[in-house]
Length: 116
Picture 1 (tube, rainbow, N blue to C red):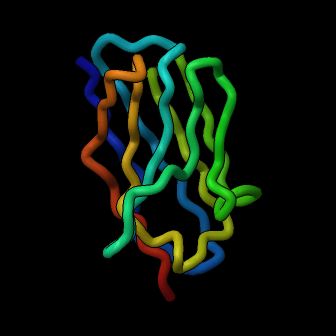
Picture 2 (picture 1 turned 90 degrees about the horizontal axis):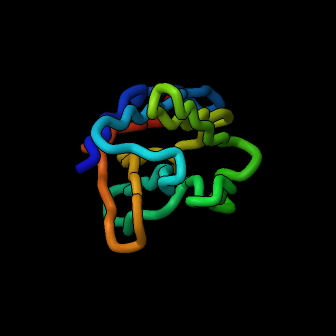
Picture 3 (picture 1 turned 180 degrees about the vertical axis):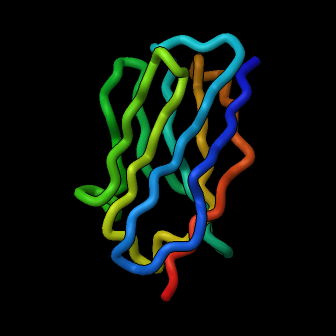
């Protein structure tokens, strides 16, 4: 079992920055695929950024060049640095961990609101 706890969301003005953290507890391996999805009101959940099990990264086209995902294995924590935020980045951001293709764990979500 894996527990994921997100933090770092909040209200920020357009052009501002936030850093999200996802702390994992339980049976964790550095080979787990982990990352972030987001879901805006009335829209489907979409992948924002993630690490594959092999350690490579994937980003949604809409966040490339603005968001950076990083991982601190010693702390079982994944971060999402979000810069140059736009109103369309407003969503609930969910951390996920995928130990295998058949197992998927989610955090409770953290709200990010970009507004002036």
